Length: 351
Image (cartoon, rainbow, N blue to C red):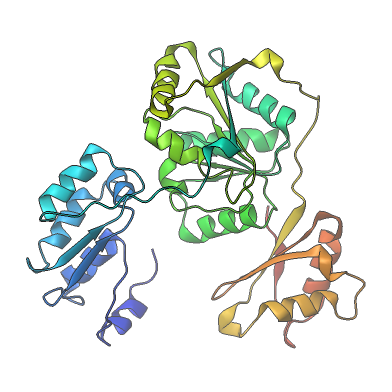
C-alpha cells in the first residue's frame, strides 16, 4: 500500500469524497483520522472482487461506523449469492439495475479443446503457435499458477507476464503498461487481478483453466471482440471437466465448438515477439516531465522517426515510453546519454 502520511494530511482538509480499500479505510477509522458520522453515500465498487479477496469482515466493520440513514450503492460485475446476501444485510428495498455488456458475442469465435492430463501448457503453446494472436489474456484459477506459467512460457521464449494479488502496486502498474503498449504479448492473470482490466484491441482470451461459474466465463471472454472487432476465445478442458462445458453451453443457450488438439498446426521454434519495447525513465510528474519532453528527446537532432515511438505514460516519479523493437537499443542509448528538459535521468529497459 501507499504511505499513510500524505493521506493523513489530505483528510485534515475535510474532503467531500474519500476513496480507499477496505483495509486502509479501516486503518484510518482506527486512527480516528477518518470519521463517518456525517456520511451521506456509501459506495461499494467491485463488491464481488472485495468479497473474493476476503474483505467481508472489514466491510461490515466499516458499515458499522456509518449512519443508519444513508444511501448505499453496490456495484458488481457478477451477481453470485454472496452479493445478494450482503445486499440484503446492508440495503433496504434496493433497486436492481442491470447494464447490458457492450461486446457482441457473435463477434467472438469461441473454441474448446479437450486435453489429456499433463498437456495443458503444451497445448497452450500450440494454441499460440496456431492462432498467433498479437495480444492474449490467459486466465488461471490460482495466483501461484499464474506466475509459474509465465515463468515457463518465458523459458520457452515467449514474452509473458503474470498479474496476481501478490504483486506490489508498482509491479502491477508496470505489467499493465507493458501489455497495453504492446511490449508484452501474453498476460496471465487470475479473475480477481484482471477485474476492471480494459485493453483495446485484445485479440484473444485463453482459459488455461475453465471457471466453475458460467457467468464468470462469459465475463472473461467478453474482454475480446469489442468495438466491432473480431475476438477469439479459446478454452482448455479435460474429460473430467465436461460438466463445466455443459454448464457454459446451457448458460449461452447455444451449442459450443469443440475441437481436437490434433487440428492445431504448430511451427517448431515459432515465438510471438511483441512489436514494442518499454523503456523506464526515473523521472515523472514531480520532475515536471511531460510526454512531449520525452518525444522531443528521442526525435530532436536524431534520426529516429516519431512514428516508431509508441505510448508514453507519466506517473509521479517514473515515466514509460514504448518504442519499436527495431530502435530499442538506439532509443535507450539516446535517453541514457542525453537529457530530458535539460536533466539527465537513469533509463532502463523493462523485461
